[in-house]
Amino acid sequence: AAAARCCSRAGTRRRSRRPAAHSHPGHEPMSGTASLTNAVVNLAALREHGRAELVDVLDSIRGKKALVIDPRFVGPLGLVAEVPLLKQHGVDGIYRLEHGVRIDSRQVLFLTRPSVDAVKLIAATIKAHRR
Image (cartoon, rainbow, N blue to C red; front, side, top):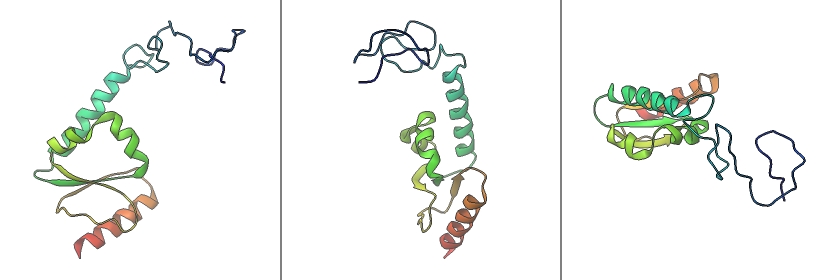
């Protein structure tokens, strides 16, 4: 059983199977998860800003579009925008950026990190998409 400790504070508390209640800022009581609004950095505001930026980009491309995502972004993207929001703004297909991905849309938006490997995959995807 893991010791119940508050963040990285080491203590002489007795080990317990139940998490200790967190009463300091940045934690939700009894949940052990970080609060989005009471943390040192306002994570809720960051999430809203990221969501607004993504919606602006999606809305700048009229009509239906495919979203091709770097696999490392799949989880983090879910923290910013859920699938219904993406669909509401014209995304009709969501694909992972990987070799051999087939896209069924004329308009494609790529969401990746700036890397040589990503650029190579994007180029291969565009080439295959044109055929």
